[in-house]
View 1 (cartoon, rainbow, N blue to C red):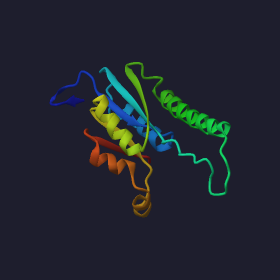
View 2: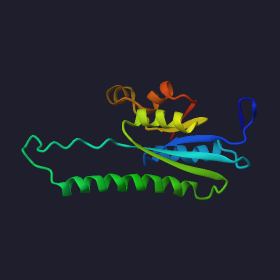
View 3: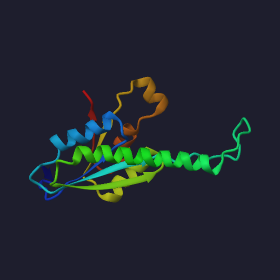
Length: 161
């Protein structure tokens, strides 16, 4: 693979992972089709942790959240995060020549991914596509569409067959 017209000594490929089959397929696809086995490459696993909900002292029914319930919700989010990273590392386990970095940040996935890609100096961002139709994309927005327009590096969207 070439970078700036020269043989690349090292590629830094950021892969956005969210635990979905689509993102894990994109990671596997990039290992097979983008990263050279003969070069020293780095895969940066990006996980955007959803922002913590703001827990009002009471919800609309007047229910009061206890510290224990808030702690349980935070523990669950940490378990999800660990599960996503573990899944991705399982896919990477047979690729000893590839250096793996993990970047986990809290916030809107679109902003977290674009900011992190810029901060780590990624040469390429790889993302899976959930394959939402026009209506769902219009209502929900598309993280990959946002990243295509705002990331400061090329973006590769991998569709799951």
